[in-house]
Image (tube, rainbow, N blue to C red; front, side):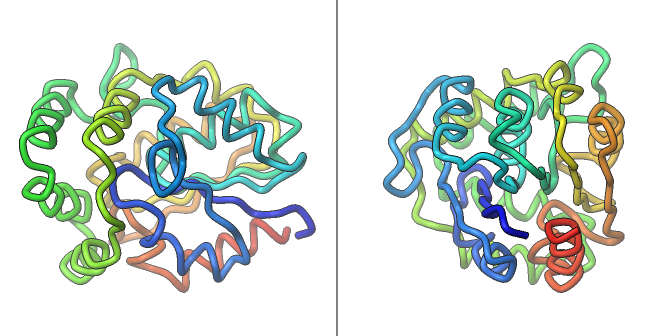
Length: 237
């Protein structure tokens, strides 16, 4: 692999939970807008363009969860910038829509958003524990993720990400992805159901789907050796 590998983390917990896996793949991380030293960009489309502007042509681009949605949009809209696409727990739409049942009901996300606005420190363990439900290592992965989570970004940053999760629908973007694509998904992911990954893989021309059994939303922590081996094979293929 001569092109650089760049990875976009997920909502709320920051870069540290993905750091070991990305380092093992000789990659680097771009924080989501508003995290770390990155300025907040409130508009999803503008955030996609800003990330694309920082990539070398042909970059291998990866992302987890909300980061996977951003990576998918970058690949679809800026094809010259992305030579390979790695989507971990990815989906086109985080909430259920007409014709897209593989997702969270909108009222559930609304309740969660209200809870985050009221008390993020109380909601975060419930959120992380919830998305690890069904994982063979649920308790240990939840504890590890909470321990690794970066300092919380501002309420405005968190609310922006939740608004994107509510509003963004990338079903029309996915068929425009022209580069080799690998989706890595936990069979037991309660946040992004396996049906979402199967439907997304069907929308992206030639996409591969690697499903990890007894694994939920964070395969890079639940099955790190398997995750790194599968991702490395894809990136170096």
